[in-house]
Length: 352
Image (cartoon, rainbow, N blue to C red; front, top):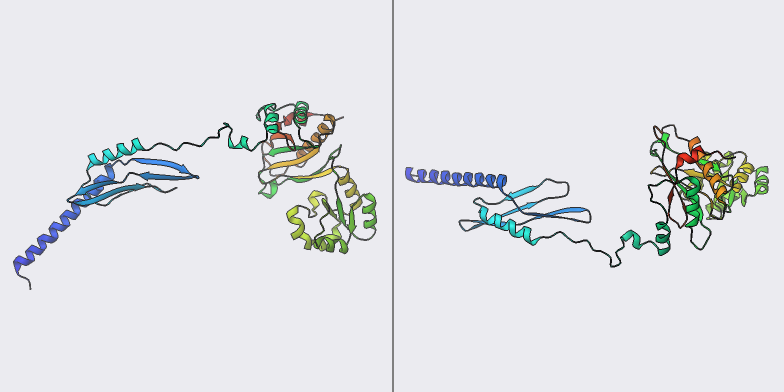
């Protein structure tokens, strides 16, 4: 065994080491609780980055780095790697760091325009300046006049209605999809194809269909023929049209009973869509986008078409829509600024 003196010396050494370790740990905890570190923060590409001044403490010739870091969504963490930090040195480092750092300056364009304005044409900015603010609803007649006066493109623009509803289409009972027959038409030439059999083929062509057929038309469409804007099908042709889903679905051309494009009376459907019947639906944000004519229409014709759209949206209100149904309504030309319309005034109109 070891002599008694050597054993006592070894115990003293262990005790001394444990005491020093405990003392350093207590000092580290004290520093963690009381230390102030200069922090500079900036947001880069949506990510918050926090950098801290690294202070260095000295204790018996040992360097003790102190740092603080922060991650997005995480907690602030402080690391002290040795005890005995000199607080005077740390405060000096804090003051120096605050004096050196300055927030980043956002780059500005020489012409003083915002990034959004820089992407707009001079023609559009001039037209937008003559339109009241987006939060100033206009009477229907005044709104249509503003839209027509500011349609300055070199072609005949379409008139579009954009209506925000208080619905969430991700729920089945709050989805909106229907059709409306515009009294004055759309001003566009609609190419219609019809899938039907027997005598219905001749009736569809007589009503104005551009294409009509059965299995032969299905094969043509499957082969890539897409020279039509609307596809109407009789119920008995839907099983054969099922294989066209991959080609027609992404283009929104697949026949659907809600859209009025699956019907036993295909000749009548062709006449209606050729005469101005249009389909509308709410997008993922609950907004309905629907054209209601061309700007070479008279203001009275555009008013009548707009009234028909408003009435159709009210008539097809989803069962799950609770409380306030209408939020806002805007009209715009294809290349012009939007004008907010008082939808309550449109709803109260009476068309003779």
